[in-house]
Length: 280
Image (tube, rainbow, N blue to C red; front, side, top):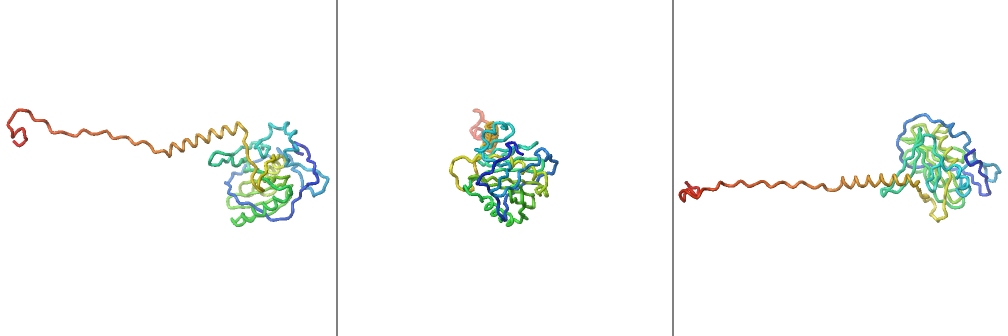
């Protein structure tokens, strides 16, 4: 059971259909290390058929759990559109745009990197199925081996590339879709591995804050960093920009000191005219 307890299912319960899917994105290699999946427990939720009276864990809609969030604020990372649990030993990595705006936030764990992002979606379910099919095609064109597997929320994608193993977990919500990408070294994203257990645990406790603004389908929901972190990153970005400008600015060249022009020794007023003219 998650921190919020079991989530009630309503008449809009979703279930995944059969499909093929994948994703195209580059990831760095990661060193393999130990990971304690007992920190997450083993209750990641389970697939629930449409119309079933059973219950499951998240991801949650913010409006459904806003009051309960007050009790776990210090255990969560609020990124505006998504609110995430931070795994033990996890480190935050922020990807910035050239103008200094946050573009993506990653959780670096001992076994690899986990990235969670939310997107605008229609009220009816099914966006993850469509998106995943497009991603699978893209990955396969890049030479990756893509397989479709069943996870707690239905179908998941497992992709093996030349540089990393990837697992994609998607869940449809009400007017939103949330996608998690787990990336690690060879074999790390296989079912049953600690990275996958950590990824599913994070997804099961993720909260999506959709907001009321109309957005085109598939548009990413905005990432908003905590104030203190945003200030630190803004200062670091400004310092980096300033350093780059100083390096690119033309350096002033030293002005050479004029050298005195050697002059002929003056001749005395005495002597003959020939001697004064230097002819004698």
